Image (cartoon, rainbow, N blue to C red):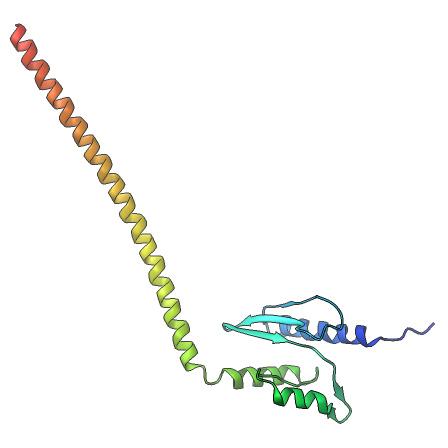
Length: 166
């Protein structure tokens, strides 16, 4: 009995190949989205260099390249869309990401500033904890000093009392 490959399983196989390639070869930490077959939505997502990457895997290539509807969709999209086949995936994704991120000097500067702010906040939190401990210790010392002064007063009163009795 011959098994036929459905377009759904063909698409799932292609999506799986892309996912494994991104994760294992390109070392992009990504997750598969498994809502329902044929939903036409996002198949893989990732946070890469502080950018949200969304992958929609469609095995739309034809012998002569890509279907005209696939080309039109990629060209008219407000998003950065990459049309590639599995054989060109590595170089195409690397080139694509380089092109999309090439003018990210402002984004890099913002990222570095945010990182510095996070580091400064962390230091500030540590200093606040130290200040809190110092204040608590100061309160303890003041309380002990008050107790010492009370005890000293009591001792002096007892000495006066005993001296008066004697």
